[in-house]
Each structure stands twice: as structure tokens, then as C-alpha cells.
Length: 347
Image (tube, rainbow, N blue to C red; front, side, top):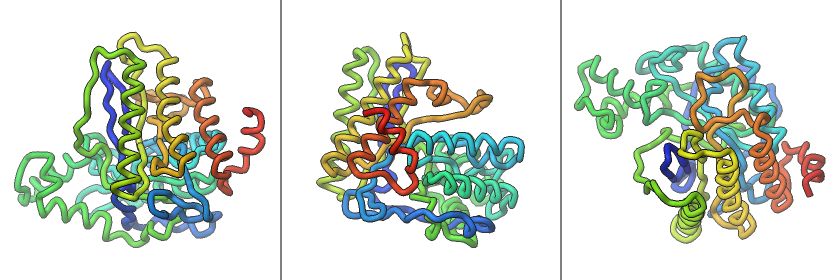
């Protein structure tokens, strides 16, 4: 994650697969999936993702709300609209939530008890993503309180009289809570290990981290730092880990002092330039995902980082240009059929 907000820069690395792919089981997802078109599985060769025998570098985004919006029929068109927009921009991966614990429209109502309608909503997201040629990076729990998260797991343990601590961080060490989470991913019937739409699963959103803070630096100095910081982690991916490195959230807050839209454009460009240079040299910097994309009428899901991409022509153009130059470098995926005409207009 690389985020600049509230007058500060908070650059945090989202390791999706620096350590390993984490494919876990999710249940009752497959009623329509087998009838849909197939995508090729993304693999790994050392510090690179591989797709159809070629290095695969990712240009993508976050829309955390896809499952939640798929529960009610009248809101499902929003899911298709954002996935179609992503495909039109040549984007290849969307990061989204595959959890909602004990809240409204909860997927997991209580430990080991699930809402079948919400599972169907997640199924809908997967099918829609596959239809658009978009792969999904699924998060399984929230380190924050929204959508239940680790706070809800701790609450469940206390309600059942088995919790060792009231601290939310007991999620990580309390045996009972750890078992709740293990059961959450183990007791499902259909393993996403065999679903080609899911590129990977992330154990948690917003895991605890330490990040440097910048109050008074000039904006261009902050950009220089972020670029340097990203390159240092790519070097680790190359030289120490031999694994791909993904930056799974990046964005610039519109609440920053003296914010101007052009700053967000420069921020996006800085992040994507680092990824492009990594791809050009066949290095481990495997991709970056913008936070966050929405459609119209979703103010309740927005934050100071969100944009409706087709209403922000400059950011839209930057994302398309990144898709095009990665495609020229490594070749388009089979799903990026629209890129030939789109990119020929941007040479």
C-alpha cells in the first residue's frame, strides 16, 4: 500500500506474494462458474508472475465493495459497470473484499455460520470478473473495524467465554480466535485454488505496519521519496526474496492541505513509472493497484481517495497509458482484446 493522506505520506507495501501465494478455501461458490469462459492461471517463475508463458505485470485497482453491492439485485449493475470500465482501461486485476463478519449483509454471521445469499453475491462477483477478463485479489478479513474485521472475531470469543484478551490484536495469537478464522477458510466446499479468476488471496486488509510520516516536505520531494521507497522493496524482491512484489493500494487524499487534482495525477504517474521500469528490466515489481474506483451514486462508499475514473479524464488517461505501455513491453493478455485499437490511438 502506498497512500498519501491528511498532509502526510503513508507508504506501506502490500505484499501479496512476496512470501507466498495464499490460496484458501471458500465455499458454495460454484453453481454458475463452470459454465463461464475460462482464464489462464497466473503462475510464478522466481520474481515474476507468469501468464501464458510470458511475464505478467499488473495494472489494476481496488473496489472493495463488489460483494456487498452484489447482494441486492438492484445494485448489481454497479459491479458490472466498474468491471467493464476496468477492462476498457486495459486493467487486469481488481482487489476486493471476500469478507463481512457479523455486520449487515454479513457473509459470516457467527463463527462457522454463513449467509448463503452473500456467498451467491461473491459468486456473482467472480463470474462478472471472469466475463470481463479481470482477475481478483480477495481479502479475507479486515485489520480495521469496518465490515467486522478482527474486532468481530474478538467479540465472538468474549461472548462465548473463550477469549484470552480484549485486545483486538488477540486475533493474531488467541488459539480460539485463530481457530475461528481457520475454520472460516477451511470448512468451505469449493476451493478457490482451482478458480482461474482468483490470482491470489490476501490474509488481511491493512495489517499492522510502520510507515514514515512527512509533514512539511515539498510535494516533489515526497514523490522522490515514494519512488525511492518502492525501488528499495523491489530490490528486496529481486535479491533477497526472489518473489514478485505488489503495491496493493496507492492513492492521494483530496483532504491534503493545498490539494490540487494535478497532484494526484503526478502521484499516480510516479507509482506507475516505477512499475513500468521494473517490467522493462524484468524485475520483481509486479504491479500496483489504485485505491479506489467507484461508480456514480456511491458516496457512502467513498473516502478522500476515491474517484469515478471516467469522470476524471487525466487519471483515466494515466491508467490507460500504463496498460498500453505494459502491453507493448510484454504483449497483451488474451483478455485485453480492446487494447490494440485503444493503444494505437496513444502512440
